[in-house]
Length: 413
Image (cartoon, rainbow, N blue to C red; front, side):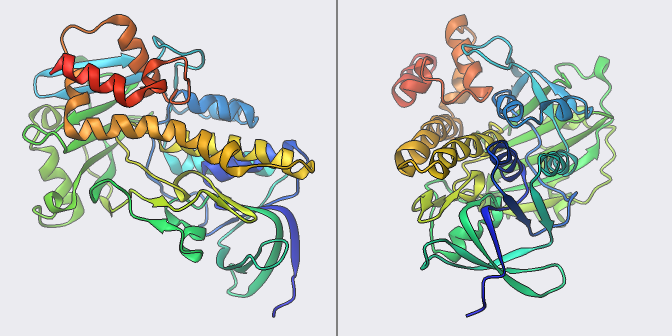
């Protein structure tokens, strides 16, 4: 066996938002933290519209000032479009205490910023280093790593946090993956110079993500996420069988789909499609367990639901905050229960989002948000969940998501 060459308190796999925030929180505890990232930053990543709830975790990690001063596009809500129907939610008007505004970010620069802040906090980050194997037989987990120069080495860690996102390193190496209960969906997306002129765009607000329902298919939708500087992220989400009907390059397929919605076509009539589109298929994922002997899974490495409500980064940062708190007790010598203290609390919010995602694709939640006679207090409760406050059990639509939403669907049908 290759001798152990290095040791650290906590090994974090992945330098995305959950990995960087977890590293910074652990450095606040005085832990020695090593982060291994497969890519070289900055690198492209999808998922650019943050939720206000995530600001609390950035603040907790000491990264808020850097984010605020970076010049990202301000965001205060979400707009929804279905044919001639339009509605929007201002996240400052919500049933929850906390941030009501956030940002829409190019993830390449946002993730790089967070990684640099983690380094400033004292974490070591090694880019282009890939975890290739893990051994949990000993008292402490050991991983084999391939460095940027192609050489292999081993690390023994007091604990491992897998923040590898869609790379899902430990789920693959430990055979933890299980099928998602969602249909297999795909997304086609790109960044463009949007050319939107605000005074002629009708219902359009650069301070809000815009979610548009396909004119004929309620389970097909588009996102438009404005960035600072006149650019935006544009994408479409549908089941793979639907997307496969469209031929040509990803850019041609995406533009054909966007042009099927009259409002989107009009909005982007002056756009410059200057970046080749990309696609991703089968992104929804789940695992048998979010933790095991010597490790825990953060964010998308554990479970990814769906991009419709932009919950991915918020769930990732929530998982980093929860895991760091459990590890503080763990390293202090306390008996910790990862299921009770980490997995169950994290899943509560994830399950809230899941309820609303499932209802969105079935059409029920769409009927709710486009309903003409909305009660202000119920609207504020929905706004809070859309703003990311899916763990706030003072909200009845968090505490009893399925029953409450079902009743609301029946009223609005």
